[in-house]
Length: 385
Image 1 (spheres, one colour):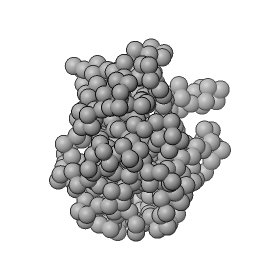
Image 2 (spheres, one colour; image 1 turned 90 degrees about the vertical axis):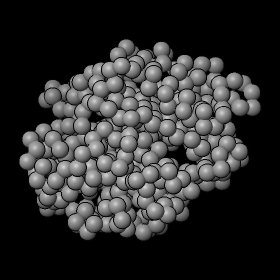
Image 3 (cartoon, helix red, strand yellow; image 1 turned 120 degrees about the vertical axis):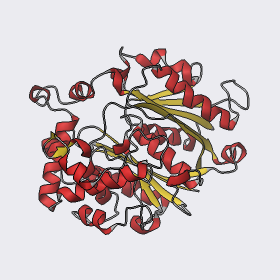
Image 4 (spheres, one colour; image 1 turned 90 degrees about the horizontal axis):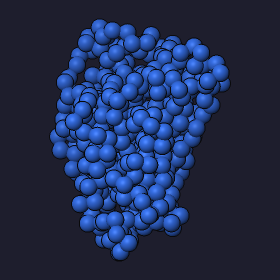
């Protein structure tokens, strides 16, 4: 990059199954106020004023169409440049960085929010499927993931025990994360005995639903970043890619969109050996099999070797490449929020502020977000301190 983008402040709520006592606007305000307070920025037109705002969220989760019209004031969206990202929060980070790199902004407030408890996730996801063929079959993102899981584990010989190891590892990590929803360790047998959600995915191998929460961050140009904090974290690479929406048009055991996004981000960051150069990774694994498949797409191992990777112990805390020291999406994160929260966790690690979940000496990281059925949309962001 000719000019670096710095992350100068991050914040997140505690993620819980139901935040019945808070309106979604209050969640947005909580994290926005936090990052604004960390930097001293405000919503004025003066030198301390924010240049632009970007929010990530699905209107369908909030109720009325165009729900953000009633929420934008919380993040100071009015009478300044404001954008919506109706996708995963990682895309809001991508977009905010582009705003700064293009010279259109000096500072950007980014917020991702969701209260899954307000509606049924399955109904929202069903609306996101093809209305001519797939909706008639009742397919949602869970059943799409099950088709992908079946294809992936069958082709590559992934065992139930290997999938269970992903859950055990991430739930062990989440014990040390005060923001995580699920903070109780589980055993391999606990996972193997959990009820079937959608064959071959067991309930313990899936992201819990519902989850409520929000996160936020402030991006700045390199010059402003150095003035706003003495510990900026730099975005070094960005990449995204979108695959075919129609499930039958792609090999679900492959993740070419992720591979493309990773190649673009790594080229920008000068990364040639991701398995060796990153100190840790925060990736979006809504299901246990996805951590193995996405690890292949991110270049942490060869194709079909995700099972071997989890067996090796390299992705454990203390291993060569810890994956999801925070506990990951399996510990409980809302859709739309998960991708930005991956970046938030990476920032805390790179600033040495991750507490009991800290990876010692972490200097380079990769964060990953996704959206759409079976990981149709993929976004990769590399960072360093």
